[in-house]
Image 1: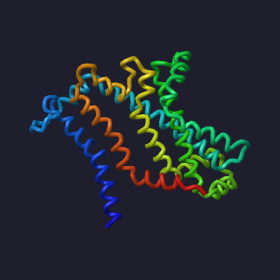
Image 2 (image 1 turned 90 degrees about the vertical axis):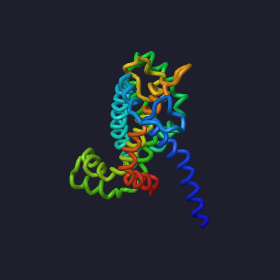
Image 3 (image 1 turned 135 degrees about the vertical axis):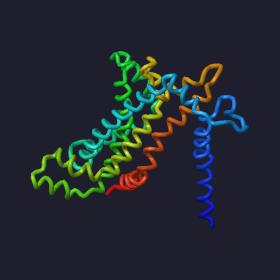
Image 4 (image 1 turned 45 degrees about the horizontal axis):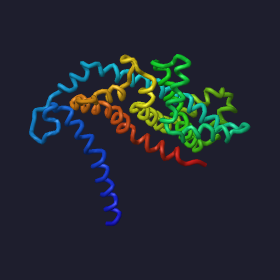
Length: 267
């Protein structure tokens, strides 16, 4: 009975803090500004979504999507190779290099914005999506490498040795043997990285000032005016931002659970 009360309390807390507000945002996105915060019955409409896309919000979604997609692909490619090297190879100062990379995970993003802004300003990289991709990959790599190293530690080394004996090149060992086995861990890493980048605001605020280059979180904040707030469009935009989260988490929940469980255990 005691354990049931604890689980029920946790479920209730999650519902109040996460589920209910999310459902409310979806419902509110189909209401007009006049009836948005009232309890009166009102007809539902898609006008908020129409106005949202007429304002050009679709461009910002595409900007966010392709920046995140390219960043995730690069992050996964680099993380798989780095994790394989740290897990399978022996070299001088190995733990020092690994610790140095993991140290990057301890710094909050906000302290990185100013020095990176100065660097990119000198290099002429402001108002450039390449600067965003570089930042996203850099801040995602430490955790991604850590997770995949932990996952690889659970994979028998005999597989690598058998492939080497058969004359398989190193790259083919990674691509044809290690990569397929690491799919659950890679899915977790990709999902984590994508969701981290998808909702990122600070780097976008610092590096992107041209309207056609802005990302979705940056434009979402623009709906909050100094004197007025376009609440209908805010709700519609907020609802759209949650779709990738649902599409990633719900279908891939099994792989995410498996990847996190295996990746957290090291031999």
